[in-house]
Length: 250
Ligand code: PGA
Image (tube, rainbow, N blue to C red; front, side, top):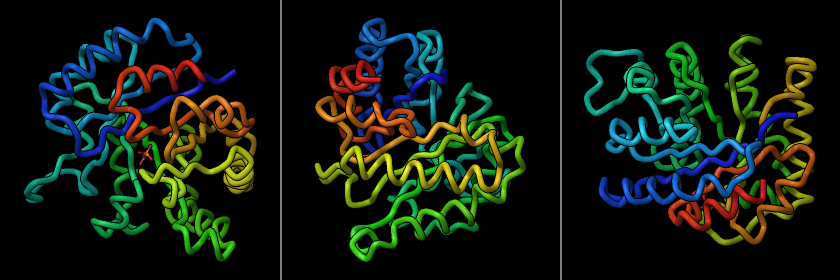
């Protein structure tokens, strides 16, 4: 039985001091969470160097929210996957809809980021998901299929085995609207089918997380679906009690 994963994406929130306090509260609450739930926290870059050690000592995974698409060199302002790995970061969120929408990250760029992460030893948490108009036009399977095709289906089986997928319908992110557990299961099963089609039985072990207005009140039902391996949590991960309550639902 695979561990469930509950990952907190802090986005561009918290000063360093606020982040430090949040980590302390999450560490304090961790002993209330089931052993078979892996907690992961993704603070902003500025916080990672100081917060990685206490988080890892507490048995909590550490993720970055992004990394550069290039290995190193004259790319002012960028942070490489290798730099992240060198301070003990273990995971990297890649392809979040906010990166796709506001920073123009295409499939081509995201494939490079995923490959940089994997070659530095980071496990990618690769996000896919459709916007509202695509869902309403019943194109969500096609859109998610293409996002997987551009990046994940291009990986070697060994790299694929290290990859985590997060399905995040864009219409549910930060809106308070959650996909129903039936909608989540339906598309998670579709994602699994696409992955099995390419990588065979190995894809039965791939963790596919749900993200988008996941909160303590809906986490249990979502996580109970057979193809939902946990959640990628935005807003609710900024409140330690809510994040811990979501983990308890795992
Ligand atoms: P949300 O964000 O939980 O605030 O909807 C989820 C995400 O963007 O990862």
